[in-house]
Length: 286
Ligand SMILES: C[S@@+](CC[C@H](N)C(=O)[O-])C[C@H]1O[C@@H](n2cnc3c(N)ncnc32)[C@H](O)[C@@H]1O
Image 1 (tube, protein in one colour):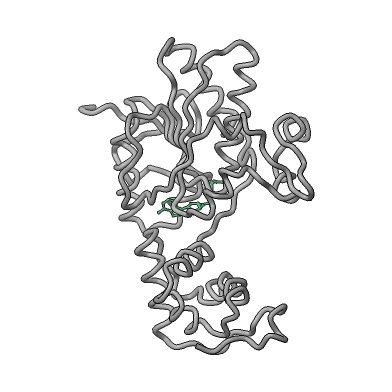
Image 2: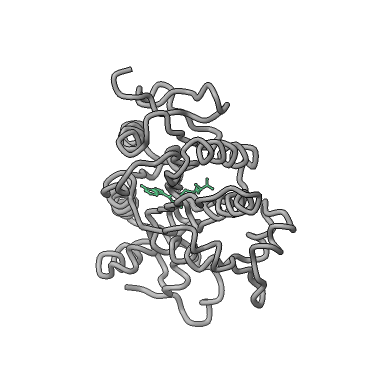
C-alpha cells in the first residue's frame, strides 16, 4: 500500500489514476450497505467525497483505500459514510415541519390517552427529529399532554453518534434554527452548540438500513423519510415504501422530501386530502 509522504499530509492528496476495479469495488460496498448505486458518470464526485478520508488515512490512491477497506471493517464504514450524502438542516422545509407539528397536535387531541408515534427515517445527524422535538415540547408548554414517541434512524452509525451527542457547529446551528430556539434549546460549548439533554432524551436513535434491516416494532402515526429515497434505484424505493406501509397506522401520514413522491411507485399511500404535500396510508382493502 503506498502512502502520502508526511510532508504533504496537511494537503489534499492528488488522486493518481486508479484501476477500473476500484469503482466496481466501491459501488459494491455502498450498494451492499445502503442500496445506493454510484453513477458511472460521477466518478469525480466519488473522488471528491473520498479525498478527506484518504488524507486522514495517509493513503495516496483509491486502490489503496479499496485494499484498506478489504482489511478493516472500520475503514469500510468510514468509506460508506464518506460516500453518503448526509446534508440536513434544522427546520428544513420549515412549512412542512410546521404542518407535521400541526397534524401531530390534532392527532394528540383526537387520540386521548394513546401516545402518538413518529419515525424520522434517514435522520442524518439529527436536525429533523430535534426540530420536531422542539415543536412538540413547545406544544406541551401550551397545555398539550403526553409527549409523542420519536424514533430516529439512519444507516450511518457515525451520523447517529453525532445525533445522540446533539452537538452542532456554528454553521450547522445557524442553518434554519431561529435564534430564539437556539437560546432556548442549546448550550454553547467552546465553538459548538449542544442540544439540552431534555430535548435529546425525547428521541430514541437506532441504526436501521431501510432496505434490509428489520423495521422498528409497532405502528407509527407519522413517518418522515425526506431526501433519502431519491438516492435509491426505483425498485428499492418501491420496496422501502411498501415496508413503511407495514408499520404505519391506517390513515397515518408519510412525509417525503420536496422532490420525492409516492405517485407511480406504490398503491399503499396516496396524497393526503387534509395535509397538502403529505401522503396518507391507504387502509387495507380500499
Ligand atoms: C440527505 S440526508 C437527509 C436527512 C434528513 N432526512 C433531511 O431531509 O434533512 C440522507 C440520509 O439518509 C441516510 N441513508 C441513506 N441510505 C439509507 C438507507 N438505506 N437506510 C437508512 N438511511 C439511509 C444517509 O445516511 C443520510 O443520513
